[in-house]
Image (cartoon, rainbow, N blue to C red):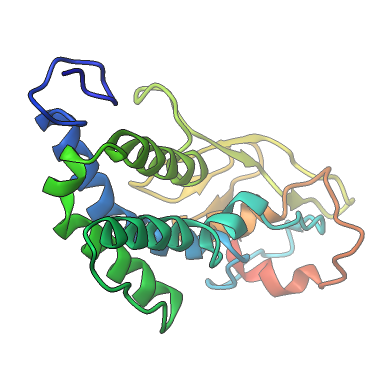
Length: 225
């Protein structure tokens, strides 16, 4: 037989051993990935300001990422996992698991349930479709939180949103560095990792006319040297 995912030869199974292991690893990772998306739902508001009268943040809030909302919703990751869990249990003539509790609990329950059936799924005629959909879910989350690129290439974090006393936005490119706070090379405004989400949502040049929130709520997220 041919593995329905990688097209390698396998014996009497829809998924080869390698694809079975990879699918199980993705399943086990999805609850953590689902939880990680929470940080991308709303701007952060932590940190303390120390501007010294030099700069402030540009007031240009961006809309929330619709992809994050879709993945975190009841019809997103949790819905896909629960639908497949029901399909497996129905095929095996087992009772469905009730969809109750908080979404985080449901994601963990469905992922754990599917993981316990992985050997059946590897033999199942729908195993390839299942594995492909799980792989797509993981890829979608990664595209949000870890944009795909060469590991040696610096990750563009955004553009500096500091504004000088005359009202000019800095706009210098900022690159992510998990080892230390990011500092704008032009105006010296600093952006520790816990401020990066706010930076993303307050990038200049793309205002959301429906959002009337005061940017003062996030002015504590960056510091100027």
